[in-house]
Image 1 (tube, helix red, strand yellow):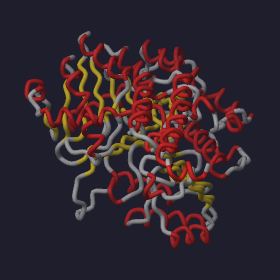
Image 2 (cartoon, helix red, strand yellow):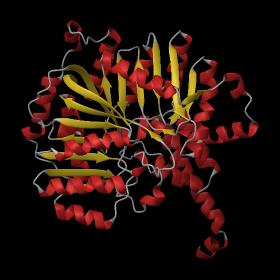
Image 3 (cartoon, one colour):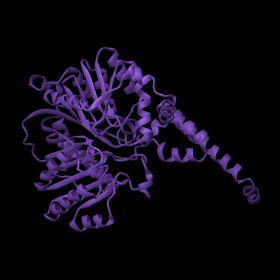
Image 4 (cartoon, helix red, strand yellow):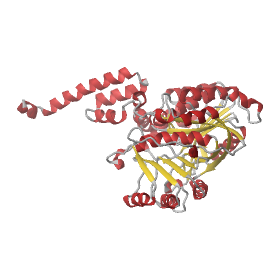
Amino acid sequence: MLDFISQYWWTVAIVLNYILVIIAVATILFKSINPTKTLTYIIVLLVFPFFGLIVYYFFGQEYRKDKIFNRKDVLNNSLIKSINQKLNLDPETLTSYEANIEEDQIRLIHLLQKNDKSPLTKYNDIEIILNGENKFEILFKDIQNAKEHIHIEYYILKDDKIGTKFIDLLCQKAKEGVIVRLSFDDVGSKISSKMKKKMTESGIKFHAFMPVLFPRFAGKMNYRNHRKIVIIDGEIGFVGGINVSDTYVNYPENKAYWRDTHLKIVGEAVFTLQTQFLTNWNFVADTTLELDRSFFPQNKVQTIQPVQIAASGPDTDWANIMEAIFFSIVTAEDYVYITTPYFIPNDQIITAMQVASKSGVDVRLLIPHKSDSWTAKHATNSYLEQLLEANIKIYRYEKGFIHAKTMVVDDVFTTIGTCNMDYRSFNINFEINALIYNKDKAKEAKAIFTNDLESAAQIDFNQWTERSNIKRIQEAYCRLWAPLL
């Protein structure tokens, strides 16, 4: 037997490979996942022996359905239930206020309330922050004034120039007696052993999210925590696209200008951010944190700016953020302005944008001219022609790299957060967005979008259709991998 295997080892290996492939294909078909994604995995499994199995093992598991990320410990806590019940404002009651909510937004609010127990909060003070240098100036001041606790959750945290300032400040606050809890994604982040030792000695409690053996070579290993959250004393919250890295700060020595958007929230919506952080903390720390009222202090804000926090990931039953974006596009009446660094959408979003545009809605998409990923760039380009055919206006930002993840609709609704317009953000990563139902903030976000267009070039449909066949082949190849990017 051993002689046979040693003589025909390649044949045995191939046969074994395709036995496992048949099992994998059967598993994929029974799960009834997106047909495009299903076909991609089947092609990879059949065409690429051994490599296809590795890809499926690391990228093909549907953990949302398996529910390995359990949120019930936090969401079922009596304190969280009581707070959410108080916050869970009926949107119809806001129609009498100046910051009233339109009928379509009321339906969107109900959708998220049913999907993810995401309460509509009423009293908030919101500040839209442009670019990392402005965000960190504001954030550092608020951290400096922290009294009780600082809760942090980042996809990318590096101990470079800005990261060292950030961590040093946290160490200082921890030594002063402020409780600092820090969660960072193990693939996205890079922190030296020396810095980790300093954090430990300062009293910072920190955990890596889903550690991998070789993070440098893990690339986009599945189920990463792509969120960027800071909560200070349960009163101030930050969420958006800006990570902790020199890349996100426009230092003079940086090679490229980085355009990004973040939010500072003071008010009731911070309680929902806090709940999401605590859910993740229980997972990464493998413990149940004792909850008390200090996490949810009395709200002092009296400004009416309705906000919902939408979170999605393998721990949610539904793709909440994607559904919110889809609903907002198909119910738009005047315009939809989208900014995203990675545009690799699913069929639902493509159809929603096409239908909205063909029905007379002004649909505009702003993406980077140069991408930080060759594959993502060409995958994005593969979708543009079908959008241009539907009279959607597409712009490419040329001043630098635009990393903002925003959408503004009809001067009434804005969403800013961590979610890209791609498969990974919609279905795989842990993401979080703020949904703002306020006319003033929508007009501000619209003005920001319009200003960004001054640094962008619109794609001409006729010129785009004349691109070379080589580019079309590159696009087709990269689009094949789109569900895995």
